[in-house]
Length: 192
Image 1 (cartoon, rainbow, N blue to C red):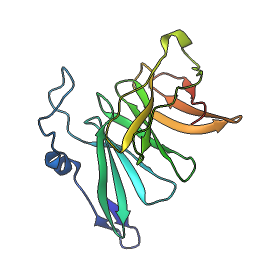
Image 2: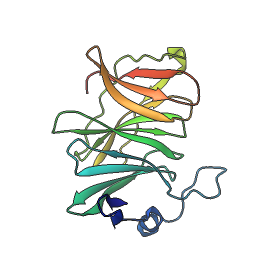
Image 3: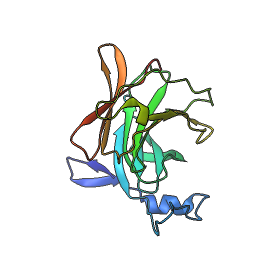
Image 4: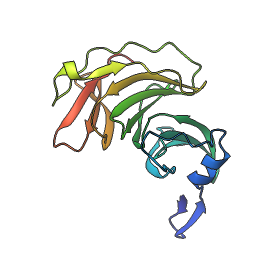
């Protein structure tokens, strides 16, 4: 919902369930052992430019919306995780590229390149993890999710992701990950 705070009323709203019904893949691809997985909104993130936002949903999809005046239009939708997308967060970069971080209930943290033609994913540099040995942490490249979305990196975190944040610490780009444990994990992204 887009609210007019001065008048305390919504200017625009959309229902993700209606959007899901309009999508081509309405045959309800569900995770094994899961009977029903509606597209409940879990997380929103607004890009630095302020005219694009993404929504992570329980159906494992990320939906991107573009602001046009006082309305939003769905720009793209792609399957990002095998379970719900608990967090999405724009990773601020140069104006020419848009990176989006996502964390899911499937224990993965993914880095997506939005709005570009398909490019070859870059190999990640070494990573750090504060609570597990690095031998247990797997880094792998994902396949293209949509012609306008490329998965650059997927980190097998192993725990349900509660929160993610892209940051720069001592000149290195990192992702901070909070999960149900009492420790914050940190992964180095290297050069993007």
